[in-house]
Length: 235
Image (tube, rainbow, N blue to C red):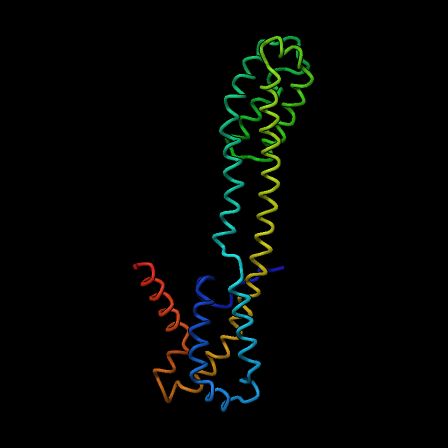
C-alpha cells in the first residue's frame, strides 16, 4: 500500500492558518458563492468546513511526536555510555578466570563492543544476552576474580533498559507512522474543502475583481501566512 501523500504544497503546520484566512474571505463573499452554486454553498458547507478545520487543528504536532522519540533515543545513549567500562572490567576478569565453560573470545564481550560501536541495537541485545548467560554459567570462577553481583546487575540493567527502550522506540515509530498517515488523511480532507473555495473563487473573481481573486489564490494566501508568522516571531 502506497503512503498517503499531501495534496497541498505547503508545510503541514501552515494548512490550518491558510484555511482560516480562506474562511474569512468566504464569509465576506458568501452571497456570491451561494448565487454561483446555491446547492453547494449552504449553511451545511460552512459547518462541514469548520469541522475539518477543527479536526486538522487538533492533530498532534510533528515536533511533539519527534520529541517523544528523542526520549527513547536519549535513554539508549545513556545505556551505550555506561557499557564500555563495564565490558573493560569484565574482560580483565574473564582473561584470568578458570575454568570457563566457553573460550574468552566467545564470551560475548567483543561481540557486544562491536555491536555498540556500530549502533547495531539488535546485535547488541543478542550479545548482551549471551554475555549474561555466560556470566551466570561462570559465576563462581568470575567471583573469584572480583566480579561482584552488583557488576553483573549493572550489565543486566543495561541489557533490560536497551531491550525495553528499543522495543518502545520501535512501537513509538510505528505509532508515529500510523499517526502520520491518519494525520495526512485529515489534512487532505480539509484541503479538499479548501480546493472548492479556491476553484470557485477563481471562477467568480479572476476576470472581474483581481483583488478578491488573490484571496482565493493558494500562493497569495500562503505568502500572507508566512509574512504574519515572520512578523509574529520578530515581535
